[in-house]
Length: 90
Image (tube, rainbow, N blue to C red; front, side):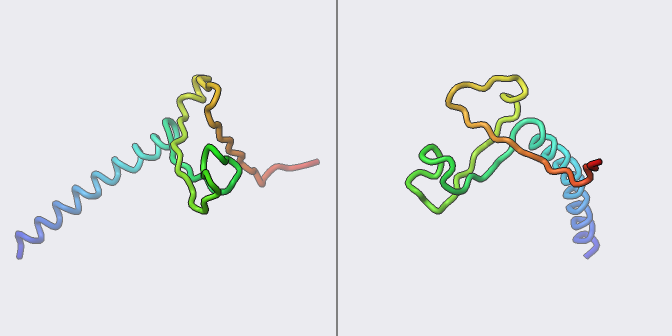
């Protein structure tokens, strides 16, 4: 019984140690290198969602190309607009 508790504690300790390392690495990767996005609807047809399918396509957005201004003809560019609610107008 005591051996099982020791195994459980070691397992939990290893899990949390890996969790606290993996989360910041994953967040940094998704913010700085690349992220995954879903494309829905007919706005990108025929390149994405060909044939009017109802299913959505999944794309990988490369942040490095944009930061280095390495955009070429035929690349798909995604813009993200952030809304700020605390803007004061006078």
